[in-house]
Image (cartoon, rainbow, N blue to C red; front, side, top):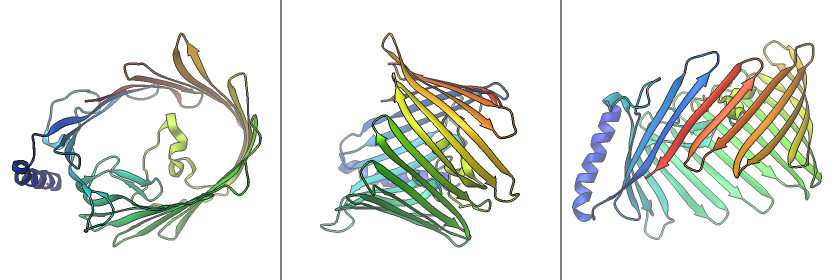
Length: 351
């Protein structure tokens, strides 16, 4: 019912606004994706985003799901409505900075640790994004369930630091992430996140000895009790490292490694030592990897291979390839010796 109420509210706003505006321009995106698993069902994900642009500053849109778990197009039904929103670019006060104000369904990513808002289903509320003054940028949001959050980022000469906080009656979640270049050729990125007295620490560093040789190291400590309300819940086998909460939840340990390149190949070698925090069980492993972008008659295919040698366990292999056709069709394939084969085909069309 909340979604219906938001949609009716937007329609009312548009009814008042249309007489003073020119005919709107129509645009949007259509996304279709099919996923095949060797040991699991074939699934379909699809979404349509339709936006009406009334002028250079005003836009209204809706997002719809076009099918169920195994059908690309299944007709339009009320329960497939995902969100409606109205956006306006402008200042909140006379002479103030330009910001994008969104009313309706919110969907944005401030932090995978504490503020992954509306990625699976939109959250109704209001947000202000795009504030900038010098090296400082900021955004804020408030939802109908009384969740208040925001992000402030400072981009300085050798230091970039961002803080994200989300607060409601049950929880305050915080993420502070900074990146620094202490010396030429060296970078360090560190994250501290906390929610309900459960903490996350993630540190990654690298140093380039020369253009062909780079040393890397990382430390992780992900409290198994960490459960920020708005963390990223999705795990994608094709982009495992995009969600560190899912990748390292409950683990503590470190990685050291080296990266080098030759003949268009990028080689990697890493030593991992991690333990499960709850049980103290430790798993050491050596990983070797190689990646290359192949050019076949003008078609570019990204390929990679990874060999993992766990201490006291069988070797694991993973091969991955991805190709995007000139017409926008994307194809990805992955084979893992433990989980089997996966494939994904999809297309994103803008109009």
